[in-house]
Image 1 (tube, rainbow, N blue to C red):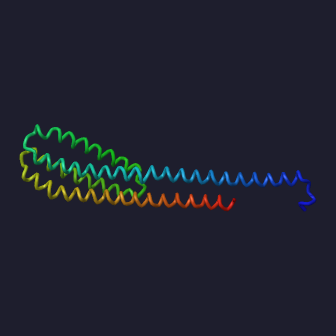
Image 2: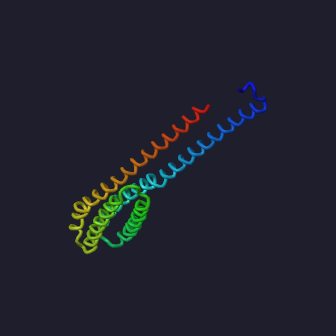
Length: 193
Protein backbone atom coordinates (compact mmCIF):
# COMPACT_ATOMS: atom_id res chain seq x y z
CA UNK A 1 0.00 0.00 0.00
CA UNK A 2 2.79 2.45 0.88
CA UNK A 3 4.45 1.69 -2.46
CA UNK A 4 1.40 2.99 -4.30
CA UNK A 5 1.31 6.32 -2.37
CA UNK A 6 3.06 9.39 -3.63
CA UNK A 7 6.19 10.46 -1.77
CA UNK A 8 4.45 13.65 -0.59
CA UNK A 9 1.66 11.64 1.00
CA UNK A 10 4.14 9.32 2.74
CA UNK A 11 6.12 12.30 4.06
CA UNK A 12 2.93 13.99 5.28
CA UNK A 13 1.86 10.83 7.17
CA UNK A 14 5.34 10.43 8.68
CA UNK A 15 5.52 14.04 9.86
CA UNK A 16 1.97 13.85 11.18
CA UNK A 17 2.85 10.78 13.26
CA UNK A 18 5.97 12.51 14.57
CA UNK A 19 3.94 15.60 15.43
CA UNK A 20 1.32 13.47 17.17
CA UNK A 21 4.08 11.72 19.16
CA UNK A 22 5.59 15.07 20.16
CA UNK A 23 2.17 16.33 21.27
CA UNK A 24 1.57 13.21 23.39
CA UNK A 25 5.02 13.56 24.99
CA UNK A 26 4.41 17.26 25.61
CA UNK A 27 1.06 16.55 27.25
CA UNK A 28 2.49 13.79 29.45
CA UNK A 29 5.45 15.99 30.40
CA UNK A 30 3.19 18.90 31.30
CA UNK A 31 0.98 16.59 33.37
CA UNK A 32 4.01 15.25 35.25
CA UNK A 33 5.32 18.75 35.91
CA UNK A 34 1.92 19.80 37.23
CA UNK A 35 1.77 16.74 39.51
CA UNK A 36 5.30 17.35 40.82
CA UNK A 37 4.47 21.00 41.46
CA UNK A 38 1.35 20.04 43.40
CA UNK A 39 3.30 17.54 45.50
CA UNK A 40 6.03 20.11 46.21
CA UNK A 41 3.41 22.64 47.21
CA UNK A 42 1.78 20.09 49.53
CA UNK A 43 5.13 19.37 51.17
CA UNK A 44 5.70 23.07 51.82
CA UNK A 45 2.14 23.77 52.96
CA UNK A 46 1.69 20.84 55.29
CA UNK A 47 4.52 18.74 56.70
CA UNK A 48 7.29 21.31 56.43
CA UNK A 49 5.28 24.18 57.94
CA UNK A 50 3.81 21.97 60.68
CA UNK A 51 7.12 20.37 61.57
CA UNK A 52 8.83 23.75 61.77
CA UNK A 53 6.04 25.20 63.92
CA UNK A 54 5.87 22.25 66.35
CA UNK A 55 9.64 22.26 66.77
CA UNK A 56 9.42 25.97 67.63
CA UNK A 57 6.62 25.22 70.11
CA UNK A 58 8.73 22.49 71.68
CA UNK A 59 11.77 24.76 72.03
CA UNK A 60 9.66 27.63 73.38
CA UNK A 61 7.89 25.41 75.95
CA UNK A 62 11.24 24.20 77.24
CA UNK A 63 12.63 27.74 77.30
CA UNK A 64 9.52 29.05 79.06
CA UNK A 65 9.71 26.34 81.71
CA UNK A 66 13.35 27.22 82.31
CA UNK A 67 12.47 30.92 82.56
CA UNK A 68 9.68 30.12 85.03
CA UNK A 69 12.21 28.24 87.15
CA UNK A 70 14.51 31.25 87.10
CA UNK A 71 11.63 33.58 87.98
CA UNK A 72 10.68 31.38 90.93
CA UNK A 73 14.24 31.46 92.26
CA UNK A 74 14.80 35.25 91.89
CA UNK A 75 14.49 37.18 95.12
CA UNK A 76 14.05 40.73 93.82
CA UNK A 77 11.34 42.04 91.51
CA UNK A 78 13.86 44.18 89.61
CA UNK A 79 15.70 41.04 88.56
CA UNK A 80 12.50 39.43 87.32
CA UNK A 81 11.18 42.22 85.06
CA UNK A 82 13.37 41.49 81.99
CA UNK A 83 12.78 37.77 82.41
CA UNK A 84 9.02 38.31 82.76
CA UNK A 85 8.98 40.28 79.48
CA UNK A 86 10.95 37.54 77.73
CA UNK A 87 8.53 34.95 79.13
CA UNK A 88 5.59 36.93 77.76
CA UNK A 89 7.15 37.21 74.29
CA UNK A 90 7.90 33.50 74.23
CA UNK A 91 4.34 32.67 75.26
CA UNK A 92 3.04 34.84 72.40
CA UNK A 93 5.36 33.02 69.99
CA UNK A 94 3.97 29.67 71.18
CA UNK A 95 0.49 30.95 70.32
CA UNK A 96 1.58 32.11 66.87
CA UNK A 97 3.22 28.79 66.06
CA UNK A 98 0.16 26.90 67.28
CA UNK A 99 -1.96 29.03 64.93
CA UNK A 100 0.22 27.82 62.05
CA UNK A 101 -0.18 24.22 63.22
CA UNK A 102 -3.97 24.61 63.49
CA UNK A 103 -4.16 26.09 60.01
CA UNK A 104 -1.88 23.66 58.19
CA UNK A 105 -2.08 20.34 60.02
CA UNK A 106 -3.43 17.72 57.62
CA UNK A 107 -4.20 15.08 60.25
CA UNK A 108 -6.89 14.52 62.83
CA UNK A 109 -7.96 17.87 64.37
CA UNK A 110 -8.40 16.11 67.72
CA UNK A 111 -4.60 15.85 67.96
CA UNK A 112 -4.36 19.64 67.84
CA UNK A 113 -7.06 19.81 70.50
CA UNK A 114 -4.91 17.57 72.70
CA UNK A 115 -1.95 19.92 72.31
CA UNK A 116 -4.17 22.92 73.07
CA UNK A 117 -5.48 21.23 76.23
CA UNK A 118 -1.99 20.22 77.37
CA UNK A 119 -0.72 23.77 76.73
CA UNK A 120 -3.66 25.32 78.59
CA UNK A 121 -3.16 23.01 81.60
CA UNK A 122 0.57 23.74 81.69
CA UNK A 123 0.16 27.51 81.26
CA UNK A 124 -2.46 27.67 84.05
CA UNK A 125 -0.17 25.70 86.37
CA UNK A 126 2.83 27.83 85.40
CA UNK A 127 0.88 31.04 86.07
CA UNK A 128 -0.20 29.67 89.47
CA UNK A 129 3.41 28.82 90.29
CA UNK A 130 4.58 32.30 89.29
CA UNK A 131 1.81 33.90 91.37
CA UNK A 132 2.97 31.91 94.40
CA UNK A 133 6.54 33.10 93.83
CA UNK A 134 5.39 36.72 93.51
CA UNK A 135 3.47 36.27 96.77
CA UNK A 136 6.65 35.26 98.57
CA UNK A 137 5.89 31.53 98.72
CA UNK A 138 9.03 30.57 96.82
CA UNK A 139 9.59 27.15 98.38
CA UNK A 140 6.09 26.03 97.42
CA UNK A 141 6.49 27.59 93.94
CA UNK A 142 9.84 25.82 93.44
CA UNK A 143 8.34 22.47 94.43
CA UNK A 144 5.44 22.94 92.01
CA UNK A 145 7.72 24.08 89.19
CA UNK A 146 10.01 21.08 89.61
CA UNK A 147 7.18 18.57 90.11
CA UNK A 148 3.75 19.26 88.68
CA UNK A 149 4.83 21.84 86.10
CA UNK A 150 7.64 19.61 84.81
CA UNK A 151 5.16 16.72 84.35
CA UNK A 152 2.82 19.05 82.45
CA UNK A 153 5.71 20.16 80.23
CA UNK A 154 6.39 16.49 79.48
CA UNK A 155 2.71 16.04 78.55
CA UNK A 156 2.89 19.01 76.15
CA UNK A 157 6.09 17.65 74.60
CA UNK A 158 4.46 14.22 74.13
CA UNK A 159 1.46 15.74 72.30
CA UNK A 160 3.71 17.97 70.19
CA UNK A 161 5.87 14.95 69.37
CA UNK A 162 2.81 13.03 68.14
CA UNK A 163 1.96 15.82 65.70
CA UNK A 164 5.59 16.08 64.57
CA UNK A 165 5.64 12.32 63.95
CA UNK A 166 2.46 12.54 61.85
CA UNK A 167 3.90 15.45 59.84
CA UNK A 168 7.12 13.50 59.22
CA UNK A 169 5.14 10.45 58.05
CA UNK A 170 3.09 12.71 55.78
CA UNK A 171 6.30 14.15 54.31
CA UNK A 172 7.58 10.64 53.60
CA UNK A 173 4.28 9.77 51.89
CA UNK A 174 4.48 12.88 49.72
CA UNK A 175 8.12 12.17 48.89
CA UNK A 176 7.16 8.67 47.79
CA UNK A 177 4.37 10.11 45.63
CA UNK A 178 6.88 12.47 44.01
CA UNK A 179 9.28 9.58 43.36
CA UNK A 180 6.46 7.51 41.83
CA UNK A 181 5.47 10.41 39.59
CA UNK A 182 9.10 10.85 38.52
CA UNK A 183 9.38 7.14 37.74
CA UNK A 184 6.16 7.25 35.70
CA UNK A 185 7.41 10.23 33.71
CA UNK A 186 10.76 8.57 33.08
CA UNK A 187 9.09 5.33 31.98
CA UNK A 188 6.84 7.25 29.59
CA UNK A 189 9.80 9.07 28.09
CA UNK A 190 11.80 5.85 27.81
CA UNK A 191 8.95 3.98 26.12
CA UNK A 192 8.49 6.66 23.46
CA UNK A 193 12.13 6.93 22.44
